[in-house]
Image 1: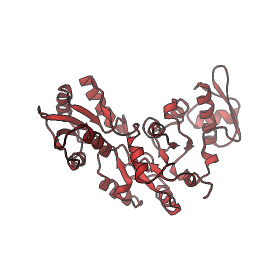
Image 2: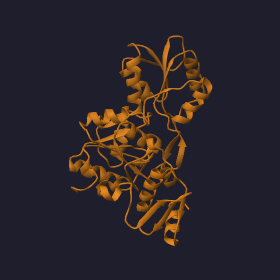
Image 3: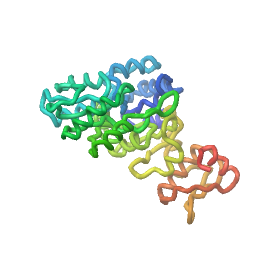
Image 4: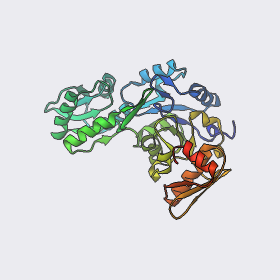
Length: 329
């Protein structure tokens, strides 16, 4: 394993939803891969935008899926949101909580006063995902924000991966308040770099690797923090999104899932790959050759990112078939 991706970094920062599990379903190979990292002596951190669960609840869920973990290894957007609140408010300030009781508990532990109804004394609103968030809760937040309260969103993920598919995420509810108030929130979680920076610091890491399935949060957060990243196709990201990714959302490596951590750097790096040629023409990136589909995608991303062309054409039956399997025909 000395030449593996795992061996090249001094910590691995895993996203959870879509990377390690889908709701109650573990992604095959995830427990074994996390164990391989630990056996190698590489610190592991779990970095999630989900603000609905306390670190202890996240640990309980991971243990139930066969991945032993400690609360110190879990970093949530709720914790990041409270850091931003504590930096900007006096101790004891009232904070209107739109989210779970665990989010309210984080606010209380920071020396602030969580409340559920708007009042003149409310100085801030903190908003995190909860399946129980209601119109009434959003209405209270709307009134507070329009009155000038500081607004902190734990994250702005439009969707939330589940075993049933993509569901509305906190970002969808944030969008409703943004429309109602004409105010932009202060965002605590990914793609802001705070979560990754805090997680890396807790691991004593200077050269960590981010592993995630969302370009606009996981990968963008890694880029913002100046960290290399592995994009996995086990969650939200699609080949089309990868080809069209803007510079702020481009990963370093690409794999089907997190089990690739034990593969070599050269196998996973986005760039030219054996068997495939991807060259920018006048109107599109033209692909020729044959081989592994993911190798084609790695080469294609490199050519598209270098040229700025996102239209793709296959030259030859093998290339056309591979593009079709990737959903890029």
